[in-house]
Picture 1: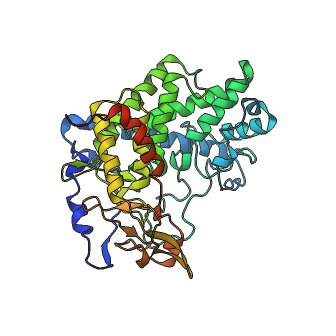
Picture 2 (picture 1 turned 90 degrees about the vertical axis):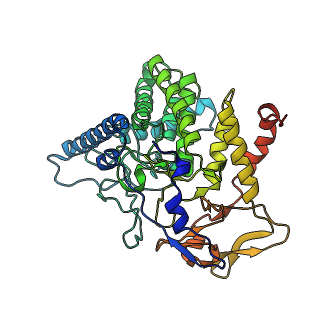
Picture 3 (picture 1 turned 135 degrees about the vertical axis):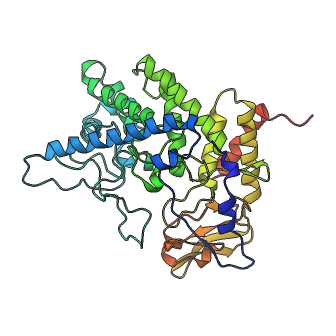
Length: 433
């Protein structure tokens, strides 16, 4: 398989920086994971990927068949469930006794009702609402409310989208919440919650790519959803969950030994995948993209305005995860050191991203910062910004007011990671001899 650092040449041509603020390119669609693409791999590498695709296809068919069986004989189908903020309805920071309360059990029963046959959950559904009804879809409507022309986010089947995902903390949060409830319900009373949490972990193990990454949606949905997804820290949070499962932490001590061993292996493969996807610029380790192509590991696009560029926020979270690992290998130490040096180098000072008239703008403000652009070109490390029409720009102020207001183009995400590095480096980074 080709290394990610060798696959950025097309990206260079499309994203060449301009001397003045201008449109500098067009954001291309991400490639789905298909049998045709797998067939282009060396013969020795095809088998695991073809097996993965076959399992995904079979599970998608089983999920659809289960819903069709429920709807057989119904004169009308229930409306899709209500969407909204999901994570807030599944708090993980309550006192232990709260998870035995009726309020927690209501949420837990709702979670059980919405678990897909594959074992995962959809996103953006408050779990403190009524449980799923027979024949009701497994997930809320997550299609774009105002789709653009040839929108990258429009599902091939708009009635079957995000049916099992790790986006927006989905599945990860449900598993953790159920584990907490099961701990507060010892014995037979907690069996259903333990079984559902175990099915959720099994779902995540099944969704892992042969190379150690995870797609955003499984069974596979196509488009950018098939890419290795660091966006919103999805891959890192699944890898963390695998570590807790392996060690029996986070109330997951009830998992069988075979599953705990599989989780340990899954986390290790995810770590190796992170090392493989870290982009090199002029031979130097830098950062990660929000998405990486499943097969080539190159940066991949997502929504119309999300380019195949390096991402400061997701990279900071990936570095924090690597620093959390015990006894880091020399490769991990080098990855962290290279990432931290890059974050320091691309920090911007004396500017602020603030509301001016009808939209946010980047303006001069002496003493402000540091700030980091959400995206940086994978070769020049200069900031890049996308708009809904798929145009790519080198100045955030060139974007439409709607996109400037509706997306976090600048932020201070790396600050916590940079502070943690000072402590970590004292133990693991040796000065040159």
